[in-house]
Length: 51
Image (cartoon, rainbow, N blue to C red; front, side):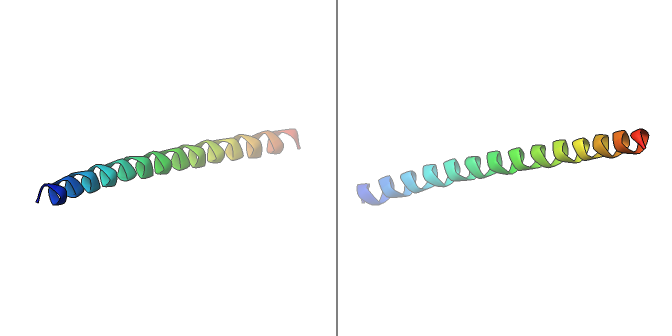
């Protein structure tokens, strides 16, 4: 019985850690996408001005 409770608690902890890591990965990808989009906008503006 104690082993089942311990396994249950460990599984919940591991699940929460993996969820937190997944959210961090999603946030970094979204930040990269926004910065890349902003850089593309800047590049387009500068090239149109240079022409």
